[in-house]
Length: 155
Image (cartoon, rainbow, N blue to C red; front, side, top):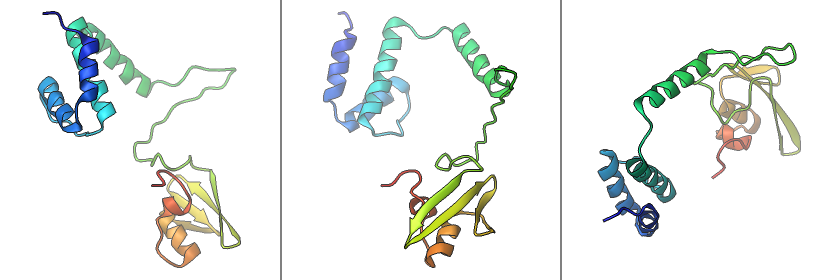
C-alpha cells in the first residue's frame, strides 16, 4: 500500500482539534501545547512529508545550527560606509516601539506624549517604570498601559 500525502492532508482537515492533538502525539512522541487546528495540520503534514521524503541530513542540521549561531554574533555587512550591528534584547517587550519613539494619545481633550526609554518611559518630565504607571498618572485610575496607548493585542 502506497502512502498518499495529499489524501492524508485532506483527512487531517476533517479531524477535530482533539483528534489532531492525538495524531501529533503519535508522530512527535509528545503532547502539543497548541490546540490551533491550522498549526497542528501544518506541523503534522510537515512531519508526514519528512517521513515519506526524508528529513534534513545530520550535516545539514549542524550547518543550519552553525549559521543561526553565527548570525547572532556577527555585525551586518557595511553598506555605503555605514556599519549596522544587530543587537537582540530578549527582555524587550515586542509590543513596544524602539527607545526614542514618542507615543501620542489624545485623551479628554489633551494630547498625551510619552517618550519610550530603554529602561522606562518619560511623561511631563518625569520617569515611569511602566506604561500602566503613566496611564494612572494621566487618568487617576489604574489602567492597562498597553491598552491605554493602543499597543499590542487589542482584544
